[in-house]
Image 1 (cartoon, rainbow, N blue to C red):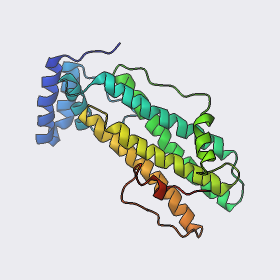
Image 2: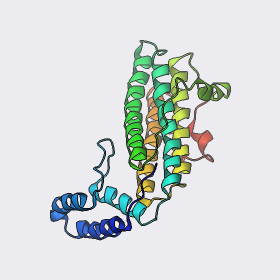
Image 3: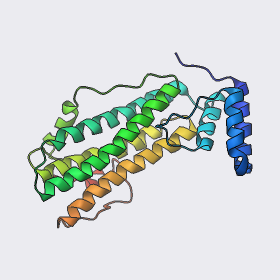
Image 4: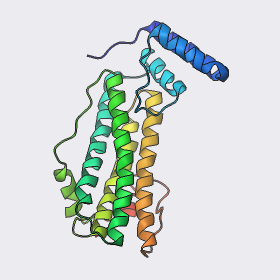
Length: 238
């Protein structure tokens, strides 16, 4: 059951937020006092945001500027993509060769996967903090990967094609975040979601850069935007 936030908490949050911005040297003292007086839950370790951003989030929710049920649903949709990405990198890692190209792809995969794990932990913590139940991982996501294979947007038969599959998945993750973030009602969550989406786009850029270093003549950043309209510019067909 979701917990409602008292309006007293809302006013206190917003009032103290302005104090924190105006008196940064006293921010730690004000923060400790505020958490004690109005019982704001502590920032979850996995949530990477400043005290100001966290306070603004709670103030927004308390004042009714956010829609908790809506935002929990949106965050769970994003969490689905993080579970999928973590599984996909685990699944593909075992199919990479031991040669130079395979190990280079593996290094990128592990770095990208580490980011996805942090995103998963952050989204899970925030959903719980909002009073919701985080969506858990499935046993596998092979059915969600099959359309990529059918469309020639990667495969599992070579190191290069595995990298192309990872690229397509990262591009779609970036696009999905852009679409999901637009549905959020809480301003502070919009900012956090957009920052995660930008990391997904950077993953796609890193993979394209790897192809370029292997001699493939492609632009690292093929379009000014990562969107459904530019998707075909970003992915590499088998």
